Length: 383
Ligand SMILES: [Zn+2]
Image 1: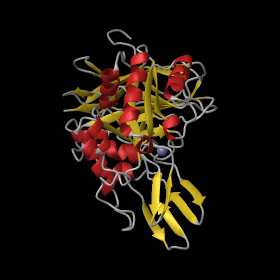
Image 2 (image 1 turned 90 degrees about the vertical axis):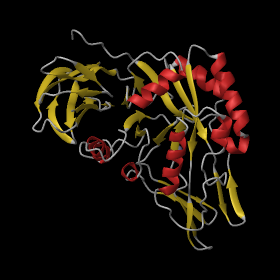
Image 3 (image 1 turned 60 degrees about the vertical axis):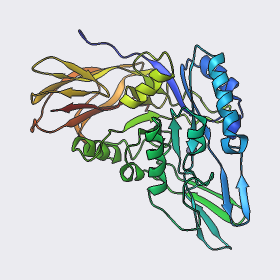
């Protein structure tokens, strides 16, 4: 692969709970464990709140709001300063909204587990004023039924205005549990990937790799809308470990950064620009060395996350995967449609674009014979 730079392999674990919100390790212990596992970038995202009120009855479990936002941020700052070899991002897993259905005998708390991970806010007041139902900043209450996407969009817009990042957490997960005579129920909310705008990304793992990222699925619809100018921003996938206790694997699944990550700003920049890919297990030796496109006329390359501005209607897609195990399937997706299937680790594929005026995207899904999967982020070809 002459003239192009091989991707780096900086392993990150995104979405981690500590003892601040029900995890059984302190932030210091989490950092030590991650270092042992070869992780360089950590996004610690304790729950903003876990408070649910039904008239006079309330549950209030361990969370950052309960503990104190200021103390949480101070703690994370000191942990980051004590571990300069690691890149430690501090964020929150937020629950912007929930609402009650049913009656007093059988109340149902809906969407309490619909979560958005927030990263990259700087100031204490920005965290304290997040539009959440639990801190009474959202403008919504839990007794007026569904508010559709609005409370979530409000949070996304708030974070964007302040330069932060938002990721839909575990959008394919269903959650259901009983508390006294109440039921707390959250159906999968993967459709919100289409209903909301301007968020940074979504997690493909855990329990979230079946619907959204399949060829022609919700993610492809969203990327297609971006290409058609119906959305201002593309949407990236991340691996999400949702780590909370010993016995869970903090390195599974990882988000892999493909450029050097020296500090927090580098990590945030990689999230903003899609310079990451998601795996479902790091131990199985599946990596992406390169994924990008080449302009057949100028020989200019553009790799994952970027946009090749091209005047030609023929591009070459370059794929370089490294895997300890033979590959079962490599799928190249163009605009939601499988354009090429292979089981080779390295290949080039010349694609002729029928309409050179349109913006298109390519992305890659690789699966080895053990069933480990890798999802690239897209590369765009635009005019
Ligand atoms: Zn969650």
